[in-house]
Structures are given as structure tokens and as C-alpha cells.
Amino acid sequence: MNLRKTIDSTTIGDRILLIFLLLVSFISIIFIREVLPKTRDVIVEVEGKIRYKYPIDTNRLVKIEGPYGHLSVEIKDKRVRVIDASCPNKLCERQGWITRGIIICLPNRITVIVGSPDGAEDRAVDAITG
Image (tube, rainbow, N blue to C red; front, top):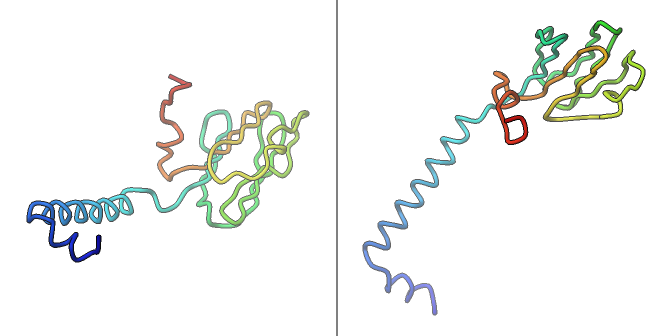
């Protein structure tokens, strides 16, 4: 079956439906681009209080003092990692680079959050937390 026969066999209703679906798809793409956050922030919390908030697209090294000691966080190439921690097990260092999510240093009570600027997506209740 060639394309010309297919086009000739469609009705006006089929053509209107096709145009409507293409229009809805196009509008949806534009809407999603406007609604989704364009940048993400790196938020550093110490004992549940926000200490620092940086955009993820700026390279920097942040040194934080916690109750147990210091913690050094590196933001580079839109990724984040803990490069030095004074805690004994250093699990936060072993986590490596992240582009989204959370790094937690439990002894220091320091949380490094990578997410949307308002932090809503990281604080949302999911199936596990209830």
C-alpha cells in the first residue's frame, strides 16, 4: 500500500484527529520545558539547618564544620562529592560523585542534597517513607 492510497482512504475525521493529536503533543513539549526546573542546587545542611546553597553549575570547594569535625565538598562539572571527612568510617567519601540525590555524613550530621532549586522533589514523600 503506498502513501497516496493511505491518504486518500482517510476521512475528514481522521485528519482532524491527527492534527489535534499533533497539536496536543507540540503544546505538551513546550509546557514541560517551561515547568521543569532548568537548574539544580547543591544544598548543605548541618543538623537539619541549611548552611550553604550553591548552583550545581559553578565549580567550587566547600569546607563545612560539623559537630564531629570537618567535611569538604567538591562541586565540579555539574557533579558533587565529598572529598575529605573527619568521620571514622568515611562512607560519605566512598559514595563518590552524584548528580542527583543525597550524601549523608551521619557522625557529622551533615547532609548534601542535589536537587531542584526549591528542594520540593527531594523532600517529597515516596512509597518507602510513606
